[in-house]
Length: 308
Ligand code: CP
Ligand code: NVA
Image (cartoon, rainbow, N blue to C red; front, top):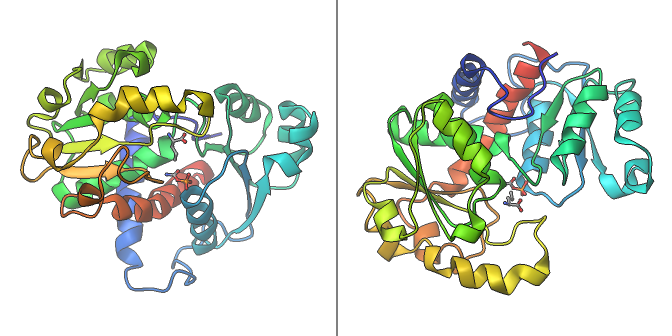
């Protein structure tokens, strides 16, 4: 049964097919109202549970709308209101939900929760973000890059800031999609060496460069994210800000990238912290296209999980 748990655990040919499907579905429904159904209804008579143990705007709304466009229905569940948040095991939750719904998307804290859910569910499970990874985001980001600039293969992507969950999924994608990735950030917030090693073993060129100006030289795409993720302790906030301030994406930094480089951020952004207003709202920014493409990319993920 095809789950969608991570980029590196999904076959490269399936990932490429999902991006192409997402693009085709987006093109096919241009100009139609959001509530208008797609011509094709692979989720007709299907129910998808969307579980959130952390806040969400994009993931929640884009999955909800996407399922409906494909003809299905959704049930949005908050972890704290489920028995899951009150001592019921993940395995039992998985077994029970599998008796009611056809698919489960979960946003959670520990990666082990996602894996246990997938292990005990008899329906497909989708990763809507864990502390470690955020694969749906990177599918949307690749779709967005290719929409604007053509194939991402052979391009130079620079991640500036915290080596967090979104950065991890970029690393997972580098080998599969054939782009080079430069991480620039403080050593204390480096991405997991296991993910760096994996990307390299898959043939990706991955470099860690502490000087952001040098790192961004010749970049085709500059990406950043919040300095304090949802799972990070607020007590480390000031320390993180101090460490990450030199890695803010601003006009001065973007000037060292290629003139036609794009800027991406998964959002929510903390304006004037990890990115300035000038870059967020500037001509190189494609952040709202990324947000839109969550919808299209995830519809392709839903179809993949359904085998449709
Ligand atoms: N980028 C993203 O996943 O946004 P949300 O936290 O709003 O879902
Ligand atoms: N790194 C961020 C991504 C939010 C979509 C977080 O985990 O909070």
